[in-house]
Image 1 (cartoon, rainbow over the protein chains, first blue to last red):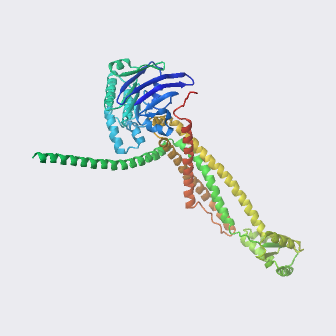
Image 2: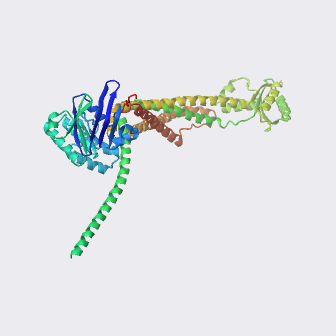
Image 3: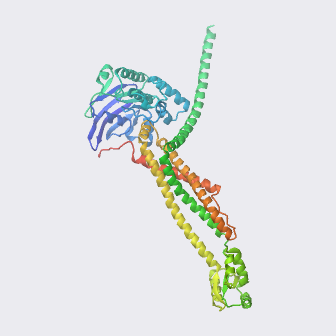
Length: 218
Length: 346
């Protein structure tokens, strides 16, 4: 599903951020992406979400070479993945419902379908009853869960999470991780960037460890 | 027994698959209309949310729209002015009449004799003599300074011979030759070609029209720039929103849509405001103009913006809004792409 083939990423200002990174995540596989800060985790995620393109090597997502993807194809590639951001990236002038509905509205779903799916997603992240609130009226953990609901509402085959438990207490973290493994069980590929060592060791998932831009364990 | 049970099972399977098929077509049908409705909803949302944003910031919106409305009202004001001048001058036919203003010392009898001799000219169709008294009467009726002439001891107006040349003499050269010929006769003070006056007036009007067109082009450019800049600021303020929408898979047209509607609203409201400005100004001016016109025989009625003009005004200003915002948003999306392509030199 996600295939990195000898990927190097170089910025003119900072030099190589990723060096010769190769790995393959199969459909329905779950993995942690870890490493010290500045090891290249964010850059790797940016390559998957096509916010950046690799300097060398190939990134293949669901059989499609992202390096060759045309500008007008990018929206449709991005619809294949639900991305959870550390800083949530919510729209603060819209309600929780509208935030979660955004991917569905963009994909052109009708009102009934949108309502049905948003309710299901709210239920999944335990936010039922908060759909009319604005993000700023929610706690950090709740905002994070709005972000998660938005990522999964479109039932994407891939879920990418950048420090999804950074603002959650251990109990909620465990809950979120349980949610991810549920998605994995129905065939969703999940990649979680995290440096929450206790969480990683606790769960016996595959670990991709980056060190100074190089993959040390996969 | 065994057979019938098997049969029953088969029947059940068939029925359930039929039911499923029906359900599927129903979903498919619903899906199509659902999508159509979704498309309509997205447009309606963009239409009203962009209007909502304009209303939410009344101070900024009023300033921008006022500037635009003034610029657009200049353009439509020039148009109205041109229409009214057209109305004023269109009954001035391209007459080839020549007026001969005779010297003061020429008597009525002498003038009639002169007219008779001119009638014999092969190029002349008719001659009309306007005596001093006729001229005075005409002046009193039409000039609006009627009483002034009574104050004078002596009628200052000259005898005029209106010479209508033959239709065959249509080219300007022939007319000019005829005018020169009249000018040379000792009784004639001034031989005036009416055509010349009309032509001069027309060329002045043409020049004013050209000037107005150039000004109009500049004003339209100003309108485009103002709307473009307003949309650019709006785009800048909503940068985060644009990025988030892009990250969850929005196409460029989805992102562009609310800004296009914003441009539409700005143009539309400015167009309507411009119509009000022009109409109110004309209502203020109308009394004065029609009073003046009544002093000159009163045939002039001011023309306002017609329904077609009004619709065109609003449509064009809305279109300018859409055009300006389309250009700006497309340019900005092109130049601030989310990705920064960094490729190594091979």
